[in-house]
Image (cartoon, rainbow, N blue to C red; front, side, top):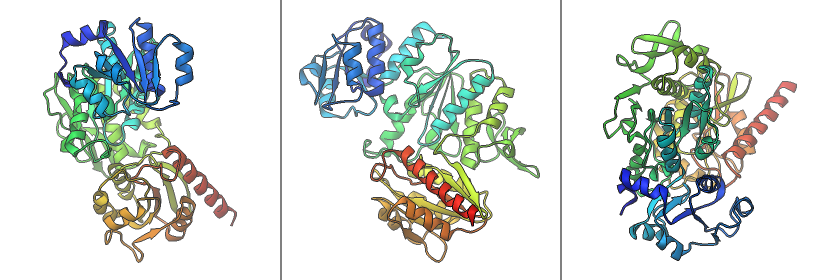
Length: 474
């Protein structure tokens, strides 16, 4: 039986008693082990790595639990009724696929969380957020709105605290979950109060065969939700299945009646619902059109969960954004510097370029490149053509981006290569002028040159700060 063919009776049966194997340790696997252990449910653990993270904690906390490392145990998998699969492991992995074909059900930590909430706390709202870009910003902002309303948010999932650990705190009033496509693949019982796919652009094409596969995984977030919040400017975010209470759209254009969007007048650009102006974007710390859309989606989600408008507006005004996500680093001689190291795919980079570029008197100097994960970079061309004067390329797939952008960048020198990030920062300083913005939006993963996107962003920020300090001394 396919893992997608589970009915309610099967879910209840499997949750009560079965031969269960957790696949993958780390933070998620450990949270699953702790949860199942507390429930008195038997399980075994497999990790294909010889020395997986969390192994010592696992042996200390569960000395009697069987742990197999260094590969898959075919015998364990073929005897399993239920596989609790960590999101970093593809269901298409041959050993897992064979077990599923043999009758095992594939679930994940979010499925365990949903079963628990549905059975023990169905009155608590669950807000579920996914998308190619912006989901961490929106998840965090919704949590701030809940807090501003005098309620206790439980923020987690793909960001921060594993979802199952949120169950340890009975005082939580509203669950706010960031969910990846990988987590959604193994989730069957999510019945969110409000759910959103913020946007969709090619990502993880090293895991998904087609964009359609990625799209279908994201769409699972709408299953059973009461209110769907979707992006009117991105048709792929519209729910394919009917929802209980209907949908709310957000757009960078003027909104329809009852929907969310942006209205402009002599006083600036307003976050609006229909013709009702809610908040002037000049009062926000978040900058860029893409962040205005993030705020609109967060407001729609929070409203669906019953959060009062005043709390939403106050939270939006105070929210400074997240590190490495179009983060303002500094300014000197009229040039602003922004760190969007989290822009690890084309869609995120496009959002950053357009969000910043639309508000500049000058142009964007873009630093891009890294591990492209097989992405098609031609999607950068329209935004680069419109807003970018120079592109500085770094990393393994810098030349691939350069080929995709031939003729797109304006200016005397269209693209430039830099051997490392430090050289790219120096070159950006030489190429920029008053009114411009230097933007690190790599459109690539970081692992060819850095430990993580955080490491890349921190190094960029440090180098920019050093540069700005030197300029101040001159």
